[in-house]
Length: 509
Image (cartoon, rainbow, N blue to C red; front, side, top):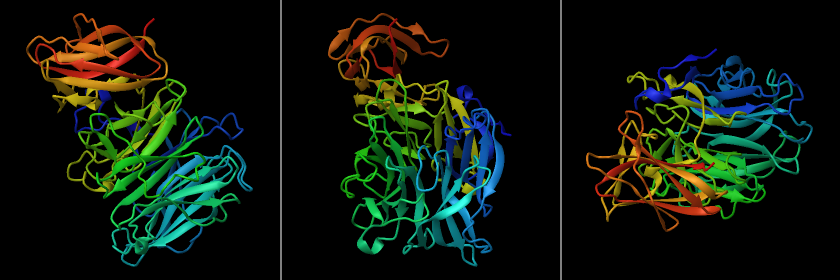
């Protein structure tokens, strides 16, 4: 059972992780909630897998109390190469539950895809095998189904032909689809590309490879595809663009059927705030039924660029189907990133009470160990996420600057120059407009300053703010009317420069 980690989120220091300690682990968390088992005692149970150091297999953990505590079940081992000691099921596990039949597998079957590797006599990886396993007894036993694709070579070799990061889904027609990364097309000018294969027999055999994302030139490495279904039935695929124009920047591509994502050379839609921050590396995109009919798309990543938190402690969200700017919200687990595997693929799951379970790896708190992934730990936390709050550092800035501040809601704030120079512009989407309370958290810098606010071009009368406890910040509430859809809120310079933490909306009662 898990024990408490070092700090509470509300009193953490920037270099201290928050969350509950699950286990030692290097990264790559994947979690599933059972909903199709038919067993009332099992439905609602959570299963979690991740990468661990060494050759023991993929660790499987279970929670029967909605993620409050976790218990180790077993290490899932490679069944295809039994007796061949250099082989083991090790990397990039993806666990899911089938919501419809596929081949001879029935709805409710659990699927585990992961990368089995073979080491040479020196312990170097020389072969990879993306394998699929199935469980019909809620994870107690697992049975090998087949190999999706095989590759070879050490990950750091220039001529490596590796295959990585399987992501499994069942299409509406019952066919199984596996998305993955491939380095097997370097002689064609693709350093790495994203592809998929289809199976009509429940993962026993797989068809031809189809390319989804491939940037020519032999430099860029699109990788780590994760695919999610949206409420309008579209599929959205995320990927990292390693060695692209902005290294590691997360992009999205959309498909009507999960099979066709457009021109493979088209990078698609970048995930980026108006203020220029963008998540980078190891993305996971999820959709949740929060807010209006479109819900909210949430992206986690290992790190960030462009004024984003380099430790990757923010989640990026969008409530307009991936269109327009993105916004940040602090992740439930505040991890430490001392090595690139800390936060390497994270898990996020919405609970029945509207809170979110977050599982991620974090570097060791020991500075001598933080740089080495073998000392990483898996942390988890359950917390609400506020999708009514818009961080000031994510707004478009005119004569304004982003400043780190551990007492701000996302560790950062924006300082606006005095009138007539400074401005923050928040272009927000609200499915449901109408009367709202607009809340502004702000602070002067020693000279009186009252924010000036306009909504959709209309100047809003404001009063004086009230102290937000003894923090030095003030809170100002004003009543505004929003349109259904897109709205523009502008905070302009005041008599003197001032700081803004965030704006927030609540429906007026």
